[in-house]
Image (cartoon, rainbow, N blue to C red; front, top):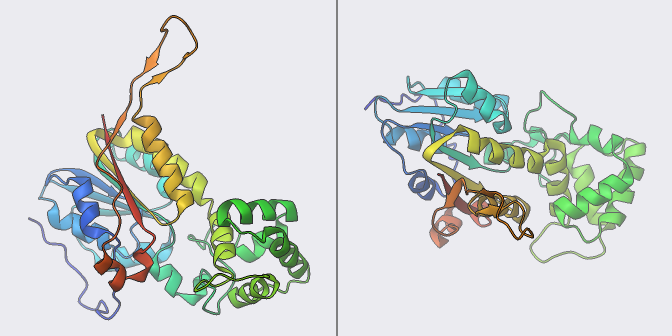
Length: 318
């Protein structure tokens, strides 16, 4: 088996846990000569583990929209079977077509949401616990930062975003305060926003920062996360080979609801005209669900608190 060479200068103190690692590998049902895609490279935990199970003829394409992840992969992973692609995983059909892999992929892994390195880097602006620029972009080279987005968005739209993406009870109150502050350009850092939300929130949840839901909602909106997820799930049907596995790790109910609904819809036979007395056309299912949802063990949650909300779902292309 070819060796995956890691840069000896890599800081061994920087430990990044890959959530549900073993369960993900089992879900992919890896064949040594198969073709696999890690749709969210991050710092390569899942990719390294996949490479360890691939033989000489195996192939792994990793995707990440974060330039720091691309730089990390280019420096730390040297393996002829491995390739890293800069871009969003919603472009997976395009990336596969360019490589002649359409309909030939044996497994697609999606580890959704923001990565630990992004959360831990204050300069990326994802955390309400660290002072940093109000950015929140997974690709800081594209699109509007959170600060710019908040300055442009209408208050009514912001209310909807906070309600739908953050399930925030005080969306109206928070949106009004944000827009008033944005007009004065008073929201420049993560702590500016976190403090504003804390100040205007009439009630707080035990063991939960008042800004948690607001930060989640704005991050999802800035990165179009739910739309991107819907697009990549549809693209998976195009790129997966028969028997190919789709493995998705979600971290909040909005993501998981989309994944669950998609897998259920695509694994169910559909009657296009259910009210017709004559059966005209039936669409055969294109996926089958594999097993039940998988959750982290107590041990994993103890070692990595960020895994607590994770849920893994698996489907297979028919």
